[in-house]
Image (cartoon, rainbow, N blue to C red):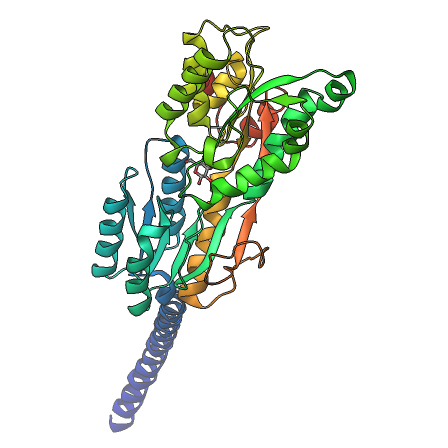
Length: 387
Ligand code: BGC
């Protein structure tokens, strides 16, 4: 009886051990899995934590000049979406070409704890103090598209090859009008210039690029500006005003082109080209033989439509998605200590320092290549252009 009891107890114990064994095995496996998961979780967290300081909670203030021209709307939207995709908080502000408003917006960005500032200036001479405040607060600044002059508070500059923009416009006029053939034949073309804002460093570069190509033809009389205005001082237009461009051309047409047609409108901005189109229509020009060659810059949607309809001849396509991408890399560089892409360390001296820059490539577009560059490049769809 005792033996029977003993073996029964043993049996129960064995089964129990087996069960416990099983149980414990399962438990162990589960525990191991859980531990693995737990281990994985902290590891993942750690990985996220490692990436997190670069983005989470960091604020980037993006100060843009105006929404009156489409290109800046695209620039702001691209910057915002690309920075947000990396986890940055973005404070995007437009100052509608009001210099004091831009100063206040940047002051607010500093006060509200921005970790980095991206500035496309209206008039950078008005930003010197606020840039110094940012530097004092250890907030790095990236100059966007337009160089920030007279300051040592700027770390990097993302832009397009601004002189290249001017050269492309000048070369387009030279080639399409075949100025060398005209010169050889002793012929001439009339031309008027509509250059950028004197408070925008880019405008000077555009002008230099244009004149590098066209000045010799002005000098030898192949190109004639009947208004007599060819210098930057005489042809620049404050704050890139479309209305001023229109008024200037209206005046030239009345005063200088009563007996002779205007052949070329050398415009440094699509907005000017719209104003010039209105002035020409007002003076009775029609698209066709007598409509002048009209240049532009930015390949805005309306400009591209005007190219298709023949109201504008060309524009300079600037892919603002690429510019934003290069600028975002600069933001990451100053905040995470990574290396941004730089391809120019010489051209952009802001009177205090030479600012390391990335220059994106501008491309001349006209009727012959807009499909390939703009539509195939995914900038505008055929539908948008047909609307
Ligand atoms: C930009 C041009 C633009 C112009 C007017 C310049 O600083 O580089 O792309 O057409 O401003 O907005």
